[in-house]
Structures are given as C-alpha cells and as structure tokens.
Length: 82
Image 1 (spheres, rainbow, N blue to C red):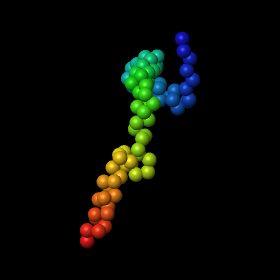
Image 2 (tube, one colour):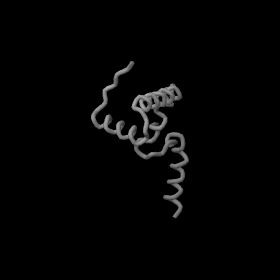
Image 3 (cartoon, one colour):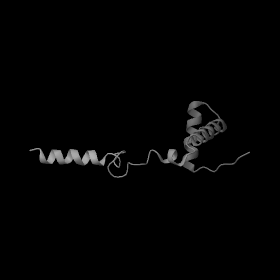
Image 4 (tube, rainbow, N blue to C red):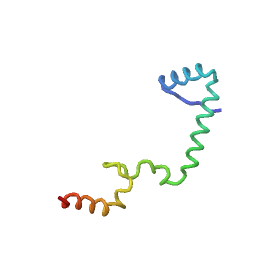
C-alpha cells in the first residue's frame, strides 16, 4: 500500500482526467508510475539522462565544439570574398 500526497491542483487534474476517461485513479497512478520507471530504466547512463540538454546552451548548435574550424573558415571566406 502506498500513500501519495498531491497538491490541490494535481488532485483536481487527476480527478478530471479520470472522470473524462472513465478510469479509476489507482489505475491511472499505476500506469504513470510504470511509464516513469520504464523511462528511467532506458536512461540509466548519466549521458542519456541529460542528452537533450548538452550543447544547447547559448547558440542551440549541438555540434558547436566539433565543427568550429569549419564555421570559422566559412565566416572568414564570407568576410573576405567581396
């Protein structure tokens, strides 16, 4: 047996969802926990957990550190090709 405390907004959202779908709350919570656990088993490596965050700070270019020479060359060619 497990007891879970929800905020009033979370409880309201859960109640509304269950009412619309015609499902018991316990079933929805069990399925949510199962999905959560499956997802975290897939992402057991630290890199996999944060992969969507790496390389996107600032410019949003994921391969910025590996393609900088090519990009610098292109910028210099643009600047001096007049």
